[in-house]
Image (cartoon, rainbow, N blue to C red; front, side, top):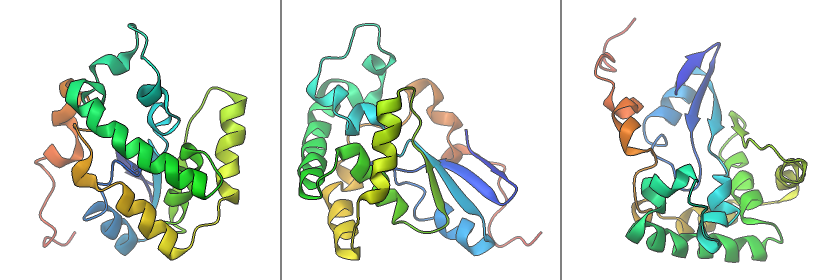
Length: 175
């Protein structure tokens, strides 16, 4: 669910979910609205579970479009690239994903989410990952958004995405 409230907006934004970069991010910045991003880690991907392990049969990810059939196979190569870059920067893929997001601007605050202390400690460790502008570009290029296979949302909720909202007035209308 996306919302704009008290000069903050909440959107999914991660290395492999960047569809807000063309319209939403510039608009938020134009209006002085901070961006609170969820899904920054997609821990089951950037931590490797869905890529290097077999998902349990009762996992909800079994039906997620990015984790089925051909999509899973294609997304494994993206994970491998991120994993190699993480080794280069002496961090985990999840830490690299968070560090990349932190470098998107001072107005961006990720919500990595976790239920385990070890993951919280790892997420905090992402603050120690120092990335140059060139590093950020290399990481961005390692995950070309057009190569990410499958939509980011489950099929049942796809039409509730911000892209499908039809009652938003055109940008040219001034309030």
